[in-house]
Image (cartoon, rainbow over all chains, first blue to last red; front, side, top):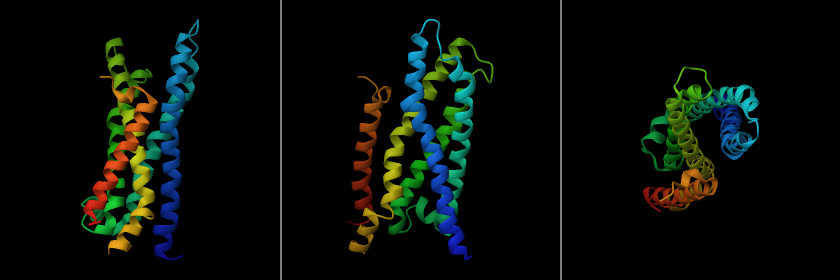
Length: 172
Length: 32
């Protein structure tokens, strides 16, 4: 087993696997759970308690740690080209650099904006009703921002081996 | 003006628009 196989073979496999878990959970929250909880809240009596108690904490656990794993394996694949990508030092690394920046902003949103506010919303840390309402809005907007950013992020992850790689070849 | 992030369609369309903007920006940065 060569180092290249470990870095670019296994590394990419784990990066994509963790990324599927992360973005899969992100899309679950935004495309399924938000609407489901809104509908459950309109039931008489409200029926969303099971989702809040049993589903959301587990989904958030895999969501936030998959985000970390995705970033670490992404950095592992880039290896000594990490700074070339992040600081756009080499032309061929500009597309993946943009993808890496988008992914990094998304990771920041997960750990700094979504998770601390979700802890208040789910009652995992004490918060007043007013704090919970504010936390709900901040977590919601950060989560929606990540859905927005995931679209160009996925494009640049793929494009760095596809359409924009062809640009490098063509214009290089 | 309504925040586009409040709707899924607004979010997805904003993501697609950002993708197009970044695509042309990256192409320009790459000299293409």
